[in-house]
Image 1 (cartoon, helix red, strand yellow):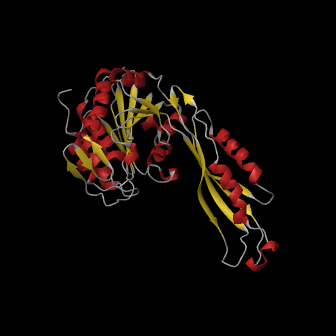
Image 2 (tube, rainbow, N blue to C red):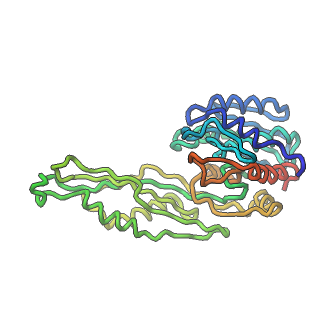
Image 3 (cartoon, rainbow, N blue to C red):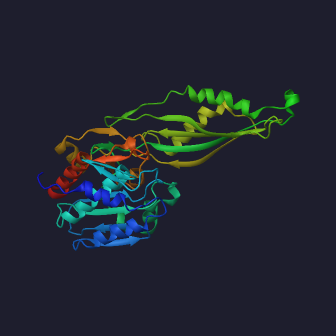
Amino acid sequence: MADLPDLLGLTAELVDVASPSFEEQPLADLVEARLRACDHLAVDRVGDNVVARTDLGRATRVLLGGHSDTVPANGNLPGRTEGDTLWGLGAADMKGGLAVLLELADRHTAPAVDVTYVVYAREEVAAVHSGLGELFEERPDLLVADVAILGEPTDGQVEAGCQGTLRCQVTLAGARAHTARAWMGRNAVHRAGALLTALDAYEPRQPVLSGCQFHEALLAVGIDGGVSGNVVPDQVTITVGHRFAPDRTPAEAEAHVREFLAPFLDDGDELVVVDVASAAAPALDHPVVAALVGRHDLGVTAKLGWTDVARFAERGVPAVNLGPGDPTLAHTAEERVERASLDRTFTALDDLLARGV
């Protein structure tokens, strides 16, 4: 379309408002002010979360959302623009997505679908701190929608669903002894060897769901053990991470992990699940998603990481990821976003709000 806005410039403005997790207030203030300037929107603020909605009685309500926080800076703040590329913290993850959201909110005074715009805090930290979780707990009425589209970086393509995640801690027991008489003890750290070897040889499933190939994982992500240099260690704790496809529930994923680890556990050992989050099935059959993909010939792949689409899916709201920026650059010192990626994302969503389904 001929009248594309300067999304790169708006993204640069947002990048230069520092918003590491738990310090999003200045950016939330800016977002709130911009949305309140839109007379066609009803705006609510809950903590550092901002929600704006149209109320036109349309048959379909689309929720467009994204998080306001970033990881800590890595020598990449403030941002810098070189030609059609913006370099800087959060450029891809996900202030480019927020720029698209804010421009759509300002432009569409009478969209063909009702729209809820959600900008929420604390996505980059533990799920217990999530601003979206806070909204679901305190004001679930603000998040009612027929479908949700989250602006996580996908380079303007659709990443459908997401994998679930589970972390557990496996504690293997041993018996202490002096290292000069090691045969009198049982070395817990050595016991970890067989388990680590099995994890290294793990063959992950790669199920195809709705045409999207997922790729599971089961691996050690941390290990802690040892007493001192002259003591046989009597305990070692291995943290194991599991990414599971949407055809498994959290309970099924846990059962799979427990079954895999069982041969390596003896009496006195312990396995504790410390964190789990559901997966989300692809929502490609939803009319809104189908229209987005079909009208603009968008690429579709599985989302292998976890995103907040799972929070919506748990509540019966189909959701997908669609935003500007290369996801592989997120959280790196080289994070950047291209004007073409911003424009591609904006064009698809602008068309949706203008034409509906």
